[in-house]
Every structure is written in structure tokens, then in C-alpha cells.
Image (tube, rainbow, N blue to C red; front, top):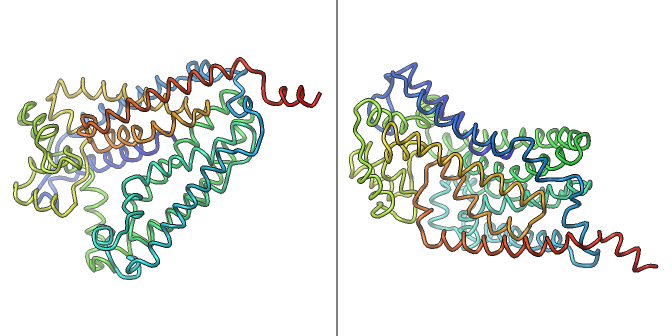
Length: 434
């Protein structure tokens, strides 16, 4: 569950690359050329394997058990009970945003689902300030909802379904706003990340109870996943038939979208780097970090599209706000070549797996402040491992986020260390009554 966001993307891309290798040469509609036949799946399998091995090492059972000791009672048990509840505050803050978001949709122009509008056109022409904030921060909001939904399980309490209801309201909003698979996939992935972390924490502290919670939680999530899958299928079919008017070419379009477009950019990099030994680290670094076409967006895909398409066509597509799929590990091989690329892949895998372990630690130890300020960094790290977006790491705003998160982590760590020397809140209340 923690790794679903990138593991699903890995599996999908690998299936696409294998399809291109086995059934090529075949036509790529987006690249307007034939691609395929070869063994391009081999280097991408090795690259993905590095990430999986790094995660297994970071989350090895011995390390998890050392992190979550049997006497670790959690933050809530150290705080005295009272009127203030962080979960209540978080719920009402999120609920007010979601209510205002729905009000904005209903009073501001047409509803995309009923008007046949593309989601990008709605955002550009009609979307209000709250809608734009959701487009920028939506997966991170879903992650915070997941944290407060799952954390009660650490204290042997039921999940807080208020936050599940808010997440459902966001998904329904996205459906009405014309969104399809990619948004549902991203939001759901970030929502279940903290749930997975909490289940690991329960399994480490109370194996039998953790197993029971896992089975019960997975049963509920399976039902929710089925509903979400049906909603996604309806949204995709509606988009192709009604919004785009491509019902007659539905099968061809879906084949391209599912089996070709996920792997076509990797095939282009494989052809350049591994077959023709044609790569330029200096040019790649310059276009990625110094002079991308649009510095506010993913410079990796911009660079790969400039390499794979006529320049004018690539810039036209990018100017429309669209881009192709891929980016990781293409960007690392464009920077490092056929040998150095694997070194960069290994380094990125280690950094990613250690950061994910840090996030898991903050969740199970109820370090809510640190978790909140690490969420934007989590989003950037996760997007990088899926789409290769590396230019976000050199932006001043990202460095500020890292610095603030570090200060918050140190401050919260010191505060929680002081709390550990206090007796549990239940003991304090007993003494107060005496």
C-alpha cells in the first residue's frame, strides 16, 4: 500500500515495454513513427529492480521492530485528555475546504461532466481559485486525509471514517470536473500510503491484532477500490465517446493509451543510448536544469519530447499544457549514459526508499507536524520516481521546504523526547483524582 503509487506505474510501463519489444515494429500515434522489436525491457527491469530491492532493505523487519518498540505508547497516550483534538481541527479545516470547493463548482459555470468539457479546458476557462489549489495540492491533501483516517488504529480504535467521507467527496468532485484515471489513481495512492504505514506499525507492535486489522482494512479497501474502478471505467469511456467523439476508434485509442504510450518514450531513450550510443550529458543537464521550455513544469518530459519529436511539434503540444508519459529512468540514462545511468538509478532508489521509511516512521510515531511539512517533499520524490521530474529538486522553493521540514523535525523530536520522560496521561489523571 505504501508503494502502490510507483509499483503500479512500474508494472504498467513494463507491460507496455514488453508489448513493444514482442509485437513491434508497431505504430506510435504520438511519435508518428514505428517503434519496437528489441530487448529494451532488460535495462528497465534492472532499474525497477533496484528500487524494489532498496525498499525491501529499508523496510526490513528487524529495522521496523527496532523503530517501534513494544513500550512505545505513542503521542496520544502522553497527552492529557481535554477539549482540544487535533483530528477534529483537521476534519473541520478539510471539511470547510471541500464544502467551499463543491459550492464553487456548482455556482461557477458549467459542470464539465454534463457539458462535455475536458478537465484542462475547465481549469483554464472556468476553474476558480479553490479548484486551482486542488489541482496543485490535491494528492497531498489526500495523503493528510489518509493519515487522520488511519492513525486511530495505532491506539486500537476504529478508523476515523469522517476523513474517508471527505476523500470520497473529493473523488466525486473530480469525476464531475471531468477527471479520469490519472487523478483517481494519484489521489487513491496517496490516501492509502499512510494506511499501509499504520498497518506496518500495528504488525510490529501487536502481530495478532495487526493481522486482524490488516484483513479488515483490506476488505473495506477492496470494496472501495471496486467502486473506484467502476467510476474510472465510466469516466474513461465517457471521455472518449462523448467528450472527444472517438467512439468509432475506441479500441484503437485504448490500445495506444494502455499498451504503447506508457513505454514509447523509454523505447526512444533505449534506441538512442543503448543502440546508437547517442547521449549528451551536458545538453541533458542544461535542458533539465538551466533552460527548459517551461521551467514551471516537468523539464524531463519536455526534454525527451524535444529529442523524440520535431521541435515545433513538441513545443506546440507542451504549450497546450499536455505532455507524454514516462521520464524515469529515461532521464537518468540521458544524463549518465548506458553505464552511469545505472549508477544514478541505484542512488535515486536508495534516496527514495530511505525517505519513504522516514515518512512511515513519522506516521507511526504520530509526528503530525513533521509529517505535514514532509508531504510536499513526498509528492516531489514520488513524482520523480514515476515521471523523472528532477528540476523540482533545484528550485529555491523546494530547498526552503526541505529546510523548514528539517527545523520542524528537530523541534518536534525534542518535544516528543521530553514527553517520553512523563508518565502516560492515564496515570496523570489517576493521580489528579487522588
